[in-house]
Length: 87
Image (tube, rainbow, N blue to C red):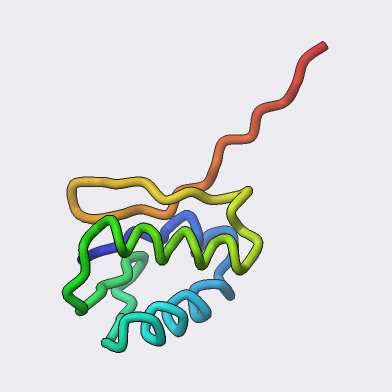
């Protein structure tokens, strides 16, 4: 399964190595980086992988900045939009 991490790479490049280690530890299989895409070799459902990605974002205190969305190719870690209050 593929995970697009291009937004995460642009903002927090150092978090990418931690994410690969986190997923390999939890899944017990290889996770490799192919450009801006993580390729997960494990047999895992999209829902379970999404949950692991959300746990990682929470653990690294990135949950307020990023979210995990579903795309046809797999999943994507996307930067959250920031809204400013006017008034």
